[in-house]
Length: 112
Length: 112
Image: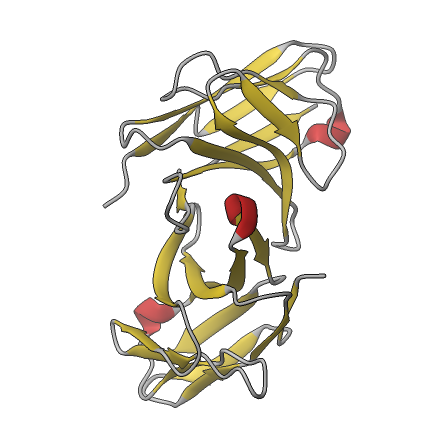
């Protein structure tokens, strides 16, 4: 079956610290992988995506690389800001029926 | 920027009332989804639609119902609301051939 596992939060960092949020997946076939971000009181916004092995998605200083050999898609950012405080969801899309599988979300708190 | 709208944003109602949560998108997407998001942040798919007159139940059993008589509109109805229905409800859509899901801002429902 298909599933996504991401690290539990909350993750608390000081401004300008390095961020890693781990995400691993199980999937049949060759899924696309995504990171979404949810700011307080809002819906989910697409942060970045990767559609095949070794692809690197990047946006707003965040990066994640599709690693087929380790079935991982870890989110990284070199220097976090207070405005990055949000909940981050890892997800995969099974190509058949365009169904999404979301991780349970990781809350990030960045302190000044 | 995705154009998907949910109304109302917040709703507080009494037990036994009938309610309809509205979701509309202007992107012409065939596929639409309803998710229930619990306080622990996890997303649960409760309904989805592949197109007009197509609706399916999702992974989480829900007492709500949906309809899809127009491509752009995917309302969710609760015939008799109960406190256990208190949650955040997120609507999403995607292109038929693509695989990014675009989310609305959500409706936060409280049933007293």
